Figure 1 (cartoon, one colour):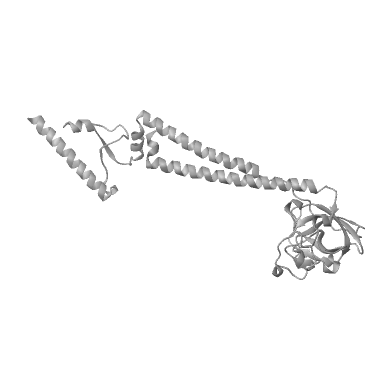
Figure 2 (tube, rainbow, N blue to C red):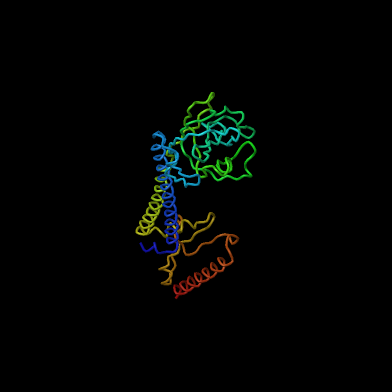
Length: 319
């Protein structure tokens, strides 16, 4: 297996190892994404149908940090809506249809304002206004909602009637719960006219697991291909036809080959036999236009050496 230390095979091995490592890194990345997605699904399934808890147990203050583990926690709060400050969240599709959410600030009894996504409506949302949507219940309302993490908004992306990101302070002012908003479940009393329900959370695990196995398989295939190629080369070396294979790779169409017995040449004799196909050769004749200058010079030197050897052999025969 000494051929493995040749420059050519060192390059093959290095390329295969780098490619296999890259595939394994991609497999590890997909596996991390799978684990993250599985944790998110577990969190949804644990919170979505759970009994509601008081809002203050999750958000004791308006500036309280909202942890990832609390996402989709079902909470209950009592207060009053501020329909005059309602707005629209653009680009909120549902089941493949374009639409928008109706956002209404909800002043919680005891302090703080929770921005509540009350429902979904079809359309682009570019020209829609919350005033077109059914009004929330008037007076004191007890609602249940799932808590979602707030989004980082940019005031320049908002219009007088719509927002792109749900950033509570930009929507409801300084008294808003800054780190979270409500995803409406129910209201008591019920509104005179209900909005279409918001889409349920997606619990599809995706294709991360299959992609993980796919990248691992690619890595194994690369290494297996390298081993297979090395085995074929080893077998060729053992059979002694590796040089023949190399010679066949160098065959040029239209070239006249001449078989030279090197051992006979060394002993002052010359034996020629008709070419029986591509084999390792010492010399060849071909169109001079197909040769480089260095090749022509080497061929000329070789022809001169052969002619001299043949001449000496002929002189010896005459004596």
